[in-house]
Length: 350
Image (cartoon, rainbow, N blue to C red):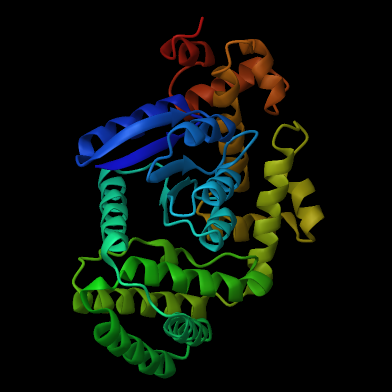
């Protein structure tokens, strides 16, 4: 049975994930926490095999929790839950050895897929033969070369190197090849290359799930097809300056979301673009307007505050960037589907 600890600060989301885990079978939830510090206390008492944690949490975020948990228990597997705007956190997670990440809203099929992969990986780890340092270094060098061809969109060179990788995998690893792990290593190598030029963000195609079957030949073919798609998208998205501006605008919005004066015009001035230019770029790259993005940030913070019994409902508006409670209440109802007071009642808070 796969032993899991769940860390999620949003109560409705945590309850939904708990139900999905219970329905997955062959796994058991041994702990739940609302934040990173609480999770660390539980980890020290009863370490799980898998830590399933949200990235964006107050006090200690999911990346900080993952780093500390992996320091305490190096063999611990970590899966992070991410919002659409968290790709820079995802890159850092790959660097820290996170197994995978899931996009919100989490679908049961995706969660169950990842749980099966983790369980399979742990089974292989128990039976795999140790490799020599030289063998491991050769493997890392091969992956680094492959990632370089992928980054430069050199299709012919990439295909040649991929065939070499496939041959080495079949000869040296056989059925022990963990294609998911190989794919994650390639993404990490890619994100290292992108870090200086593109703000650390891989194109969205990189994060679409690949359906690995556990059969080496089929998995190599599936990964190759996905990476070729990524290569084409990289070629089409070589406007690094544009993405740096949008990433900076998102960072400014996150830092200033509680300020009623936050506006697209002010943000455009800070990133050095016209309002219309930033507006078009922001929608093109994120699929939503700047105002919609700010509203999502404010509503997430509002839900966190409303879940605190000590917070007064009428005070929440001012703490998330709204001068008038009536305006805040209208936006909250439109986004969440109920009034702030009703949201608290559903959580059992009076």
